[in-house]
Length: 345
Image (cartoon, rainbow, N blue to C red; front, side):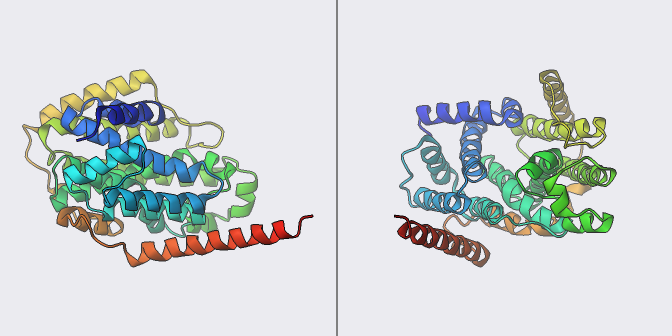
């Protein structure tokens, strides 16, 4: 069980750090909401550790060590770590799922860019769908079809985030738009990063991301009906609130550089009400055939990991490889700093 003080800390972290999830979580039953808030707090901590730190390789390696400690049953003395360790023990959380998140954050630390939309979905699977799969575990859902639709929702949410943050990412010298889209339209990525502008070409790319996200939001709805009834309103709410950000981008002409798309408290309240009504209606309707659509290729490994449920599985070769690269980068940096310091009188 999560200690009450640790849970309170996690709740406060999400209340201030993730407004969309905090709003949606209000519709989840307490037995799922509490561990979900703890899960999101740990994932938020992981994301911030890499996103906000200058030494990103070092941050990822520290996260690796924290995750190792959690699965060894000896979490660091911090509320999110202790709470996540309780989740691992209480819900038999497959290690491959948080490892996938770690891999996505390692890609961020490398400054990896993605040539195609499929590559962007590979990244989205790790930093977002992995969290969706972990949410399913908290709800006691291990059905592969329901997991596939949860992963659809995760990818859709991350595509929405990318579409919303094009300008902010560019200011941080980061780009998540598919590089082949830039090449096809003649957009020079270095010039764009140096001076991001909401050109017709860039706005068209943002629109394409929003449209692809909308397709996946629609597909994900079939999976919500396969969740426990008490959990459906909260997941519908997450779906509508995040899709609402895409709706704001549409209203803004897909310009996510001049300003940031935001939804209002009143809009969120409307989507919460819509989610409750839709959840009630779903109890009276047969399951959609879309539920049984094949998973996206990019999320197949998550579906398998969550459905099989191997808690102590070893890390993948791909994750070990990227962590080894970051270790090498850290050693090189330290050697460089040591050499530089030796020459100072």
